Length: 112
Image (cartoon, rainbow, N blue to C red):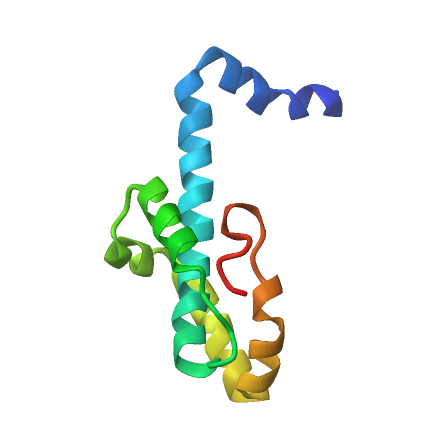
């Protein structure tokens, strides 16, 4: 039975191609918004880190949202809150050390 439950999204994607596109677009938007929050932090606090602006720009275009829309997204706000909390508790050094590993999926490689 559990195996059948796992097949529902695959079945929906096969029967309704728009389902897969919408699901993919949601993932792109969430991951881009989160990576944008990290990039904003890096620009302010991590002079030794680089941002792949080409990759970030490409993700923003794929998201079909503006930078303002991405910054207003819940994923941006959550990442921003985590970074602010860690910054207050631990300082920027530890964040700058590990932030390049914080993003996978579509946003992998945005922060180097």
